Length: 141
Image (cartoon, rainbow, N blue to C red):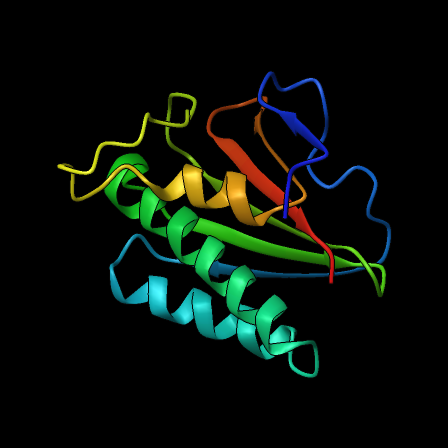
């Protein structure tokens, strides 16, 4: 899957093009919440293609891990679906803007946004007005 558009400058709102049902869940800044977020997403996407669910769960796992490791913040996972496009937002209170790191086979981390880049149709980072940010992606079957 290749990206049609990538937004990293905060000019687009998360999931702006996806109108539909929205489901949110809040999680604490604890490592076990990464698993809980994966389970939440898998439950919400029940009945979709196994590949789509697997890819979405993997991307959520990467983004929620970033919330724990880098932002050290509670986080919210939101899923918006119009029946075709699925948009996922992961919002935290951390500072800074995530960026793709160059691939380095000697590093044991730093591949999360590379995974998002490869598996999503679009993705981006939108700063929140008060503090924090939302990292979002869209995926289609």
